[in-house]
Amino acid sequence: MKKLLLLISIVFCPALLLAQTENKSSNITAMLPANDIVKNISAAPNTHTFYIFIQKTNLALTYTSRGPITVFVPVDDGYSDMPTGKFDSLAKPAHIWELTDLVTYHAIAGQLKAKDIQKKINKGKGLAVFTTLSGGKLFAKIDSNNNIVLIDGNGGKSTISQFDIKQNNGIVHLVNKVLVPKKKLI
Image (cartoon, rainbow, N blue to C red; front, side, top):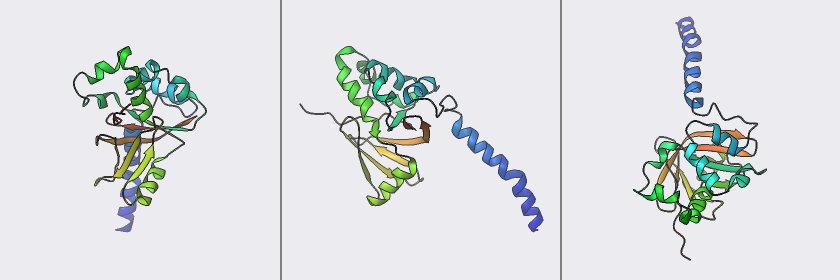
């Protein structure tokens, strides 16, 4: 019986591990640890919108700086839940400050791996608070499926779908929704 279990584990376990690795890395194969955040985001097949936003806001120097920076990059499909017209208005020159706030709201100074975020959540008794480059607050918790969920200033939730993507100047985590900062009153 032990030999049968050993044979099954030898045959099937490597195949399962390979399948999981391929699934996790399929969207990030263009990202190389030797490249900076901007270069990797521009090369990845599902982060084109965020790359365009970085270019429009002239934040490329920030995201190519020595860092380290942690960036929660929304995948292109993650913009579909934005209110009608909001996405289009962000691309207009009159909304450059709002777009800049949105892009910097997705970044935190320093390098935070998933395990670091989880530690801070545990230390905060289920809720972690981070200050973004925009100065806004971003919250994190663990959901019932053991995923890290980010909560923006408006209560919107985004799940980290791929984490700990190493860059030469920080870390990128792909998220499934756009994080929208709370409007600032001037």
